[in-house]
Image 1 (cartoon, rainbow over the protein chains, first blue to last red):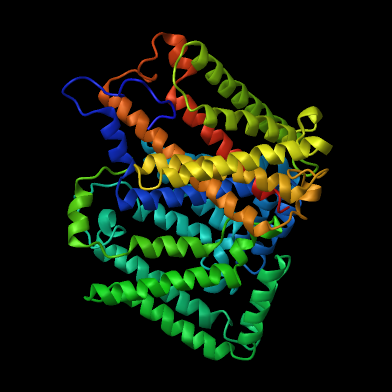
Image 2: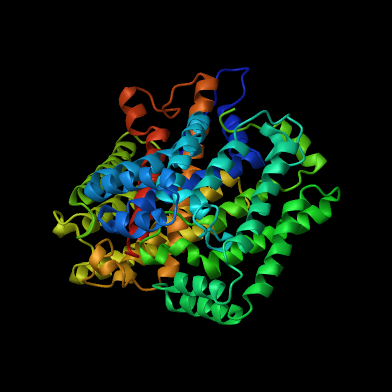
Length: 332
Length: 213
C-alpha cells in the first residue's frame, strides 16, 4: 500500500493480522464507503471550484448570491441580504473561508478516521449555504425547477450525509440509504424528493410556453461550442411542447418516486436506471455540467447528487449483503 | 496564480509545490545513499510537477515558468514521456491488486494533466493565469482531468486513512519497514509520500478548473 517498496513485508506483530492484509481489506471496502468517497469527491470539487479566480471578486456576491434573494419572503431574504452585504464588502476573506471549509469537508469525509466528523459538519454547512447562498433553492420564490437544480443542489448534500452516515454493515437494509434511518424513512425521503419534483414542475410555471426552452438556452450561455449547440438543439426540440414535456416528466418523477415501494427488485432497478439516465441527461443538456466551463460554478449542480442518491437506493442482493457485513465501513 | 486570483494564493500553492518537489528529491537522494528501494519514477514525476506547477502558479519564479520559449518544448517532452511511462505501467498493472492499478492511474492522471496544461495554453501562455485561462483549448479534456484529479485525491485520502487505521491497529511504527532510525522513517515515510500525492492532485485539480475562468 505504501509508495515505498520495502525489502521486508510490512507486517505487524506476530499473531496479529498483517498490515498489508488489513490495508487491502480497507481499500476493497463496501459499497457504502464507495458512496461516501463519491460524496467526498463532490465536496472536494466544490472547494476547488470555490477557489476559482472569479469567486474572489465582487462578481461572486453580485452574480451568484444576489439573484437568489429576489422573490423570497422577507424572513428569508433579510438574512440573505445581510450575508450578501458581508460577502460583497469582503470578497477575498469570505471566499477564502468558504473554499477552505468545503475543501476541509471533502478531505474529512474521504479520510477514514474523520469521516463522521466531516459528514456531521457538512449538515449545518449545507443548510447555511442552502439558505444564504441558494435562497432555499427557489422553493419559496416560484423559481424552483428540478431540471435546473431544485430544490437546491446543496440540500442534497445534507440528505446524503444522513443517508450515508457510517453505520454497522450488519444492519439489515434492502439498500444502503436505509441502513441508518431504516428502509421506511429512507423510502419516504425518496418519495418526498420526487413528489417535490412533480410539484415544482407544475407549480412554478415551468409548464408555461417557452419556459423550459428558455431555461435551457440560458444555461447554454458561455459554454463550449458543442455543449451550447447540444443545449440549443434541446431548447428547440422542447420549444412549444412545454406542457407535454412537463406531463411526461411528471410521470417519470412519479414512477421513480414510488418505485422504491415496489416489491420486484428488477422493476426497482429499472426505475433507478431511469433516475440515473435522467440525472446524467439533465446534468449535460440542461445544467451544462453545473456551468463549470464558465468559471462561475460553485458546485456541479444537482445531476451528480441525484445519481449518487439513486445509487444509494440500489437494491442490495442477499449475497452482497452477507459479503458487505464482513467488510469494514468508513469511520465506523 | 493569476491576475484575478489573490497573489498570496498562487504564492502559497507555489511554496507547497516547491516544498513537495524538494522533499521528493530528497527521498530519491536519501534512498540512493542508504541503498533503499523507492519508486524513483514517481518521486521524479513529483519533482518535475512541483517545479513546473510552481512556475505556473507564481510570478516570482519566472525562471521556472515552463512556458518560456525553448523550455516549453522540453517540458512538453518530459511530461509526454511521463504520460507514456505511467500509461504503460497502468496497462501492465491491470488486473493486479487494485491499489497498484489505482496508483499507476493516479500518476498517469498527474502527468497527463501537466501535459494538457502545457499544450492547452501553448508556448508563451500561462495556463494558471485568469486572463488567458478562458481561452484554453479542449476544455472538456481539462474538465475530465480535473474530475480525475479530484477522484484521485479522494482515493489517496482513503488510502492514507486506511494506512493510519491499520498502523494504529497493528501497533507498528509509521515509518517504512527496513528503514531504521528516525531520519529514515521521516524521509521515507509512506504517509509523507501519500501526502505529496495528495498535494499534487488537489493543486492539479485547482489549476485545471481555474483555466476555465
